[in-house]
Length: 319
Image (cartoon, rainbow, N blue to C red; front, side, top):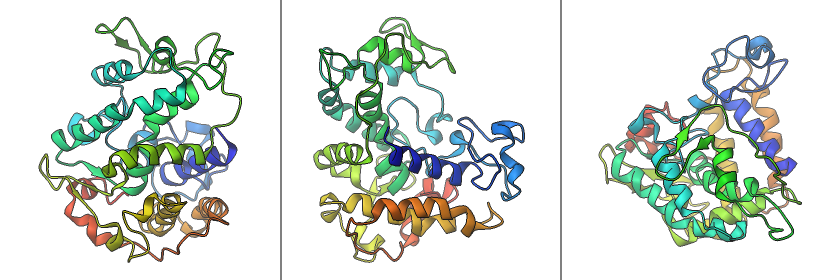
């Protein structure tokens, strides 16, 4: 992964789900951290609550429609791999195919998982960051970063044994077993020659979003299954963006990243003693990322439009 992409994700996770002001900044990749985690996560004396960790990041980092995990409010777990979902993902991976084409062929599975959330989860909520931007990573990252590279497949090829190793799965189709915590890089595995960039990822997000505009929408179920209702992006952003312009130029990146800057202070109120100091590294990173893109200036979001979604309320207003 390219340094700019990895740095942004690390900063975002640390600010929202860890302790950016600690002497040893970081966040737990499991549940809530304690003082013995990450070299004393709480020792920075700047955090007022126990950080949630990645498993507690529902709707601000982790979201519904995952490729291999269940929706939190319908399955009770958002961290443990679901074998039936892994089987479907496994079946959707094209054999003997370069990784970019493997990704493209995952679109029907991606679409089906969005439909699953609509059909089974009355609390389904799809916000702009955890939904529009992060949820696609479960489909884009494996072929883009887990694929093995060789002379035969210079762009990479994610064979199914490699896929199983990365997801800590063993056995044969129909009889898979999952051993949590044993995910590993396989033997004789060779990484890609060039870093995986944010630009490449955003193009992958748009590839699927252009085929199914719901994947670029903000919305959710309104308390019952099959009640998906989208938010007007124009209303949400005060007319700065709309559903059509999100697919143009850099607008998707501009919208999501400026939305983070607009929403973060409200979401993190009560977590840090000095919220401005805590947000500065993330905001500086976003400013640097957006510099020169010519982004339309987003002044804020109309949060009241989220109130129709019980999933938004249930996760404490995380977006």
